[in-house]
Every structure is written in structure tokens, then in C-alpha cells.
Length: 299
Picture 1 (tube, rainbow, N blue to C red):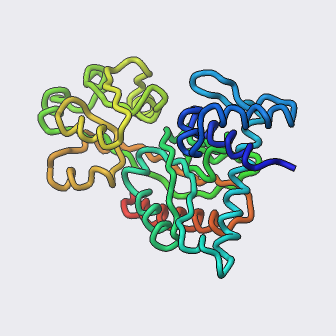
Picture 2: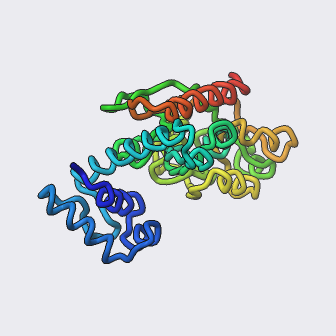
């Protein structure tokens, strides 16, 4: 039988990526954390973490980490169901992965409802839409918002709707870079702002509509949804952004759509296939709010 004090130490190191941070969270010395992991490795005759910078989990370590996440989730539910348990007055936690654009627009409402209605504290990991699934596969989170609908072993998936992205800029930027309209030639000279090197949304938009390939246009790289919009508001660049995020600026005239073309990006919720009332609540709340919020602006 597993000694869950040892498994807890492994899980903390994997989740936090550091012996120091794990020791602080668990209230013990780094040496004690290291000893617990070493003892468990000896008992199961397999390495669980690669002691590098940052710390990396082995396949066996990830399996134990996912197992501990599931056990911890079910334990929280059992304690909540016990009528005389002091844990009933405590908050419960759930780890989720979400893309930055969703967090900047509709997902905060999900966190609000989970807290107010279900006493849940959310531990959010923010990543690009195409990378949130990696966190789910690793067992770091219990559910993740992604742009991919592919099935993952041991998980389920539900459609959430689609985010509508529009290209916007300030009027003076449009007058400077698009005096004769939005053309391929002008787009090759106009600075754009992109979220990161792994973000292909803008590249797909230009390739589909104007036959412009990656690397054929100048870019600012700003890995923040709010920063994205703020950079556009300065007049430094144009950006492809969620329409509901910039609706107030469009209505005030501070930002203007540079053309009538747009990009739709579908979103999906992936989650572990385990029998958990808390996880079911997360799924139901996320799906309901996403469908309501994403449907507010239609094509």
C-alpha cells in the first residue's frame, strides 16, 4: 500500500517544480522532502523525479501525481458529505487550465460561480489554447479549456462554443498604415501584436485571407491578453482580439475594425473521467457560462 505522506511530497515537488517551494508548502525542510521522495523511489524501485532545473517528473512520477490528484479530490468530497466533519466549513480547491483570452473575457465568471455556489477555490494555470491539454495529460489540472476536440485517454470532452476574433487598431494607425485599405502589401509593413511564438491565430488569419505567410510581417510579442489590447490602444500595432473583450473600445470609437474579416476559434472543455460531484459541477458551470457568454456576440 502507498504511503500517502510520501506521495504528497512527490506531488508537491512535481506541481511546484521545486524542492524549496514544496518544502515551504508542506512545512518541512528541503532535506525532509528529498528523503521522502528517495524513500518512495526505493520502495517502488523507480525514479520519480529528475533532479534538474526545473524539476521534471518521470512517467512513474506523473502517474503517481495524477493518482494523488484524484485521491485528494475524492477525499475532499467524502469529508464534505460527512455531516459532523469540521471540513464542511473549509474551502475546497480545484486545479484548472485556461487560455489567456478566456480568462480575460468569460472565465472569471466561472471562477465566481464555483466559489459562491460550491465553496471552491480555483488554482488556475494559464497557457496558450493549444498547450492547456499538456497540463491535463500530465495530471497537473483536473480540467482544461482547449481549441482541440481530440480525445485524450482517461478524459472526456465537451464543446463550449467559439470565440470571435476581429482585427482592430486606432484611427491614426489605420490612416498611417492602411491609407488605401487593408491590402497584402500594407499588411506586410504594418506592425501587428501577437501573444507568443506558439500563437498561430494571427498567422492563420493572414494566410487564409491575404496569403501572407509567417515571418512576412512585423510583430510585437506581448504574452498578456490585457497587454495585447493596451498595446493596440497606444497606436503601436493592430491586433486580432476577442470582440467581446474590445467591445467598449469599439463602441467609444477608441478602436476601429480595420476590415470586415474575422476569425472564429472553437473552444472545448477536457476533463478527467472520474466519478466526482465536484468535477461535475466544474464541467456544468463552465459549459453553461461559456455558451451564454460566447453567444452574446454572433456573426
